Image 1: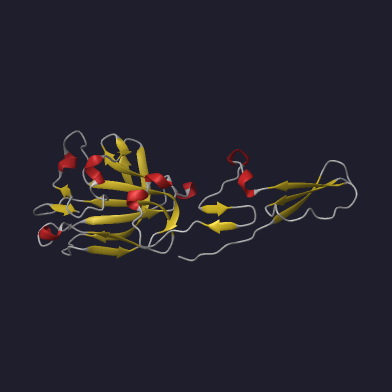
Image 2: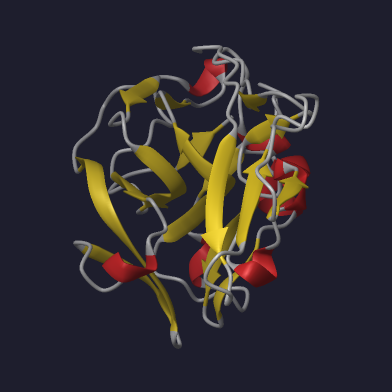
Length: 235
């Protein structure tokens, strides 16, 4: 992960209603001395932390101090999924009522315990869920370049419980693109659309590891069908 600190000071000059009145706004650089000003010129110091969403401002994935703006650092060796909630993200699962928060049943997919597993036995088609496929949407809490996705069954079931049919989709969350992406998932007015980056119909590999495109991703879709024979599982 590239690490960099950016010293960013933005200075804006604003003419007020009176022809000769000038106000200079400086954003950032609060430790710098006040510039020399001509007579009648007003100076206003603002900090990056004062960005207000109500005034169409927003700060994402940045650490800010008085003098520096630093990109938030993520260790590429750490699995993002178990830490989504603490980062403002979430996981949703498809049901007959639309997208719903995932629960304990799905939590075994990312509990980092190789001895627990989600069973792809088609139970999501009954028990009040009534979904045709097992569909999950991972929302990362920000736009990230995600390197890869990896899943596999428990070691003792590697030869028989691999996932045969699945799709992986991505979305940057841009609302201007809604309705233009190639695949729509959801029901009852609760729809999300995605660009499909991986699709398998006859997979026989137990350990599936797939690279994702080097583009910002806000949401990722994982959709799996029942196997044509037997069940699948993900540890």
